[in-house]
Image (tube, rainbow, N blue to C red; front, side, top):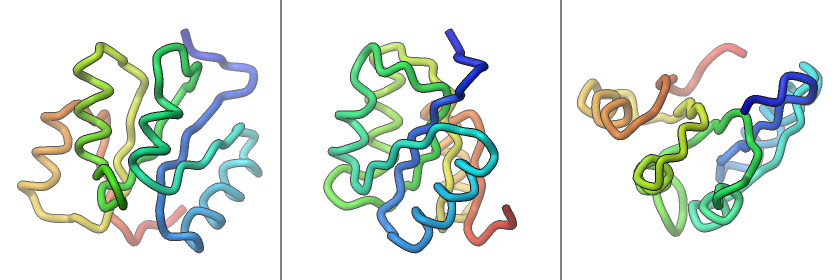
Amino acid sequence: MVNTLNPRVLLVEDTPDIAVWLATALRQAGLEVSHAADGHAALQALEPGHGLDLVLLDLQLPGVDGLSVLEALRQRGDDVPVLVLTARASVPDRVLGLQLGADDYLTKPFDL
């Protein structure tokens, strides 16, 4: 169930400058933002019952990569929307991300 009063977003991004910039912009837009700086922290934040409305997921993460996070999430039946935000711009990377269950795929750099 989506919380429309205070949408909760998990930002999974390991580059500090990008994380701060994006989290600030999302908060200014009225979203409640949590941050995970690596794949392990993302998996912890995405445990069953997480209550998130959206995940913004980088693919190149320390520890567990973003595709593995996405795959684990979908294998357990979690259908929280996932928007991949990554520098990996090749068509095969995009196709793989979408096949693994991403709802959309946006390459960096991007305009807010």
